[in-house]
Picture 1 (cartoon, helix red, strand yellow):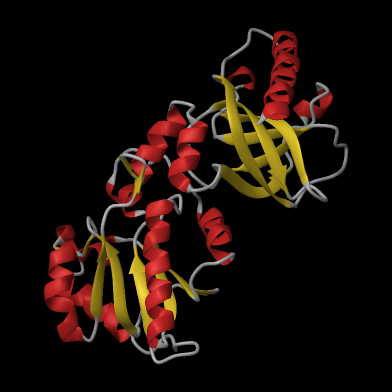
Picture 2 (cartoon, rainbow, N blue to C red):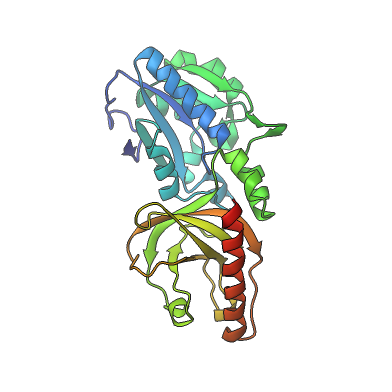
Length: 309
């Protein structure tokens, strides 16, 4: 998978073909609905001898347009890692800014055509360009004149529910991790490189792998039973705290994971923390002694949950 930062005419060359089958969106979470778009683009690319292109944005449009931080399901690194396993040939991340927002529908579509997009796959509720004037009907009507065929994907459902990033955020906020996993098509996880912290956990007998989350707001917080990928061979189990650590005066969201029965050095290593069950809410303790007592109870509860899931 190749990374692009631009769709400027002539800036990129198609890989193995004379053009691209592309899909566009925020793709926060890479859920089952997103997979339908990506899979359809891949099928059209194979049928027509094209390469595949996924176009997304940083920050997400909702982040740029909102005065409040958006609860991100996935950071840039997480989206890349999910997609690199079986994703598109090209992952294009456009900077969402005032200039991109101000493009009119014809200008935005011309940008896609100039980059080699010959087949465009979008969702039924997709909107782009200035004030969202380019919706699915607009693309159907106008894109063919610019050399692009358009496929519009119907809503994707899991059971009776229409899959969406918003619904997944609701499930995570409520601690319904199995519900979220059904909508995502996989367990919800976060990943990053382990950083040095204050080493308080080690002092208290609970050394943790600390991950900065590359987002201003997380979709959930609390204490969780987890499985950890990237710690040596196989999958390890543990207990994790996701939040701001109010007992020690924390402010920024942090994911702290205690890996059971592990004593090695993880600093600088990229790990993935898979959330299995929410054990309780984050809370502030009156002193460190009370917090340590609760940490022992949390570890025991996590082991019990992980033994049966």
